[in-house]
Length: 124
Image 1 (cartoon, rainbow, N blue to C red):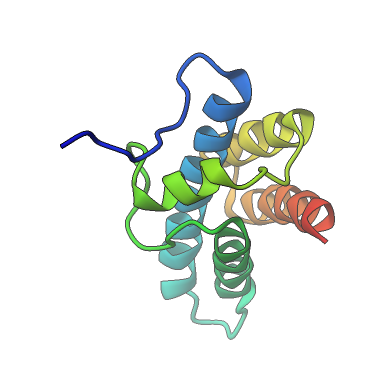
Image 2 (cartoon, rainbow, N blue to C red):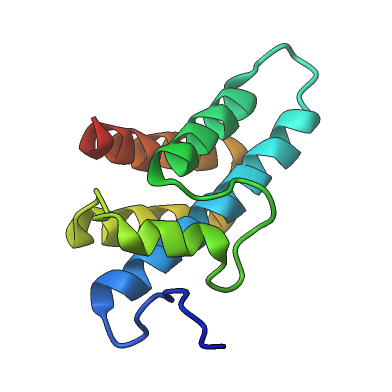
């Protein structure tokens, strides 16, 4: 029986960027959850950021469970829809979120919030 499932096109820059965006959103959400778990001063900014990322993943129709390491069932749904984030916004968000590991905690939070805010604006 033929496999009728669609997969992200590997030769399409938009498809590749879509996958990279979803992957980096998963990684950032996991980082936000880890940083939020260690907050003892009542500051819930990391937990709020994780919730915002989850809402973006939901809006994109991608499962927010395990980190994305390869195109999965949720990505099939993403490919069938018209991806609502332009390539330049995707590039900026991926670059910003990937740079988080090189920053201090407060700088990470500010950079992540800026990237997520850009995505939220595009998805409205």
